Amino acid sequence: MPYVVDFKDVSTIGLESSPVADALAGLRANEARYYSNKYGHAFALSPASEVPEVVDRVSRILKDERDLVIGSRPLEATSFEVDGLRMDYVFYESGLSINVMYSVDAGGKRAVGFKLADGMDVPQELETRFKFARQKSKLAGVIRGSYFVIKGEY
Image (cartoon, rainbow, N blue to C red; front, side):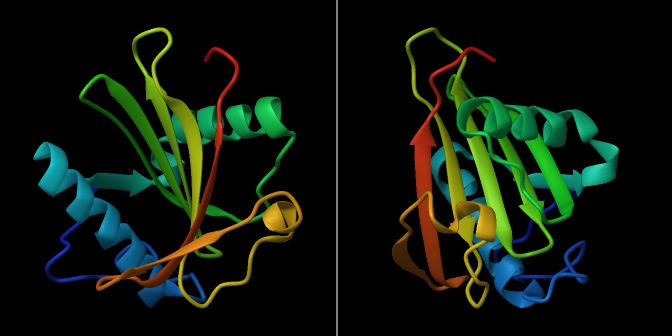
């Protein structure tokens, strides 16, 4: 059953097994606030086991585009469309969040974004391959992020 993320009263529901659950909840709330403010969209997530097609799609894109396999267990995932973009999100137990932005229209923006919850180490599979920029968030503390552009068709 989907859980609508409340960015005013941050909760660790669904993320309790993460060693950085509080920071990951803040990161998740930060994303919810962004989509609420920019698009009026309620950011709702399901347990990853209930939406395996989302986790599989994100995993396939990572594998095909950059030969990446994420070692952490996926906890929650969602897929939705806003403003001509299909957005897929997966939140992992390690504190990693991956989003895939895929324009519905040919030639539009298509990218994979990585965000690391405050307090987590850079995952080994990403460590030598990406540089992470820092941004501060009232909800999430310091978020480290990186991305790459998707070249293939999915």
